[in-house]
Length: 197
Ligand code: ATP
Ligand code: MG
Image 1 (cartoon, rainbow, N blue to C red):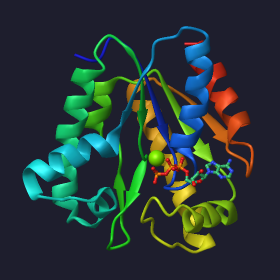
Image 2: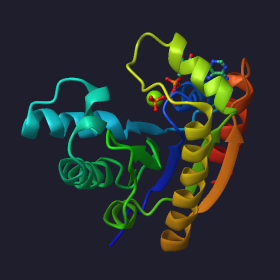
Image 3: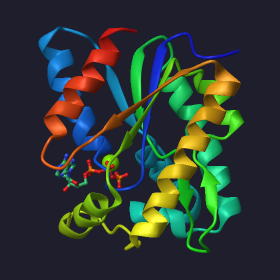
């Protein structure tokens, strides 16, 4: 059994600009009278992490042991599937999470993708140099400092993760480049794909 709504999963490495691009796209969808709910996967995970493990800061989630992250992730997937039932929803998330031991954790494991049944996956990317810059000037969050090589690797791993989800669910995949200073353009691009669903 899967979700009957239209779920769009938007992913990309931390700091690439997912939330910014989604918000820009939502200005267009509002203007067109489209009803779309946005659910931030990390926010739902935080709800659960604070209930179960007393975690208070979102950027500390990825520092929990992998087994705890998986448990929280599974419960979050189920809650999101329930909340988005029958609606058009954007899930703002990460295709992979780099944990504190340096391993990659699948962001949307099969038990989550089976519950969500996404129609479209959107991978937001840009140059590693710009991601590094964005992480350093955004004081609102505590993102890890990663070198260019690792950011590049993380983006490559995300592509593989996204295509694996497409193979399992039949979802389509689009890659949107969020160029420095052009988040509005990336938002317009995302809007175009949302409208086509
Ligand atoms: P996270 O996964 O950690 O939630 P995110 O991908 O949602 O990160 P944002 O919070 O949207 O990232 O953006 C990170 C920072 O980069 C913010 O300061 C934002 O204003 C800036 N930013 C986003 N897009 C661009 C862009 N195209 N050009 C310049 N700065 C940008
Ligand atoms: Mg975000």
